[in-house]
Length: 169
Image 1 (cartoon, rainbow, N blue to C red):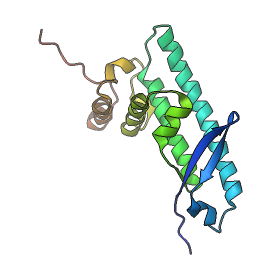
Image 2: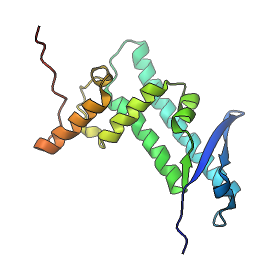
Image 3: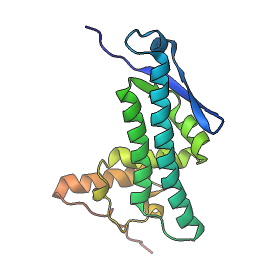
Image 4: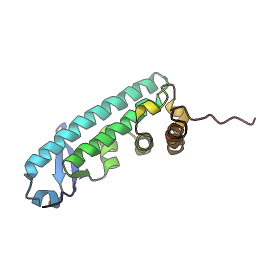
């Protein structure tokens, strides 16, 4: 009985699509044809990149028209990144340099993407985030705000917006 281990995969843009590069471990693993595995990985990556790009484009459209961006929309971007890593893990693959790949292929800033993933990491269900919560209110302290959202659920069984700090002025 062999225990499946993850191998690294990376992707490079090539003629409007992506090409997968598998680690030597994946190529030498006798259980799976490396070419077939690479094709499956490319299909997963391309599908997820399209979905994340569409979500980012919606956020950019809101920003362009100077409309507020819901924290839920940003959470969805983080969730799509989670889905990507989960689907690759199902193939026993791990993306080598997640943020490097995604910033290159999505054209977003790494820090912003990290914050979207942090929000998703701490808040595992989008329904816990109040619909009215603006991303701008939690962007600067994303981890703290996300923990607060998550803790409010656990403390009193209900979800709610982070408590606004009262000004002492």
